[in-house]
Image 1 (cartoon, helix red, strand yellow):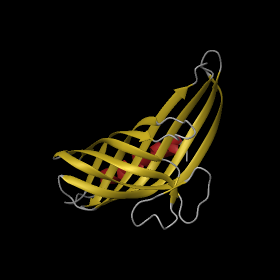
Image 2: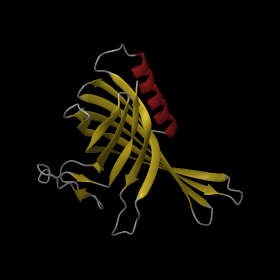
Image 3: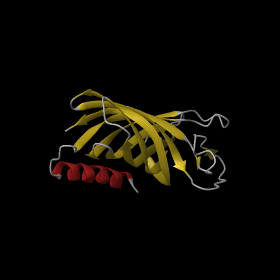
Length: 199
């Protein structure tokens, strides 16, 4: 999935939500978010920060859909290479309760795209190679209602989740209560936090 396709998907979901008939429990939200992806400490890979945005369509008091697109760009010290990362995540949100503070569980699929640019002396891109990884994610979080149409949220997500006895190098077991014996592993995790403006 390209970045353009991800943007089109976000806009399409926004159009569907805007065109949907009004319902008492239905709401459409859009807002900015920050993501903090945990680094690999043994390999001395630092944590990274992404900026992006998300939209949420709440189809009922306890069920919602989220689409989020983030971006990060880093240029090497010699200014000859650049890394651009554009992760896209689509998630199902299950709210345990709906109140001023609404905890939720989430799960979905993520498409993590990296563009490796080679730059010439003038900073112009000469060649680009693309790497793409697709995988499941799940996690938990909470949404705090600040006003009638404004909320803040934060959640924790396990990325690139695999089910069964996955033995890929770099994968870690998920040792949550009730899950530690199921052979579920993940490759990386992240915090996200942001605001949501509902219409």
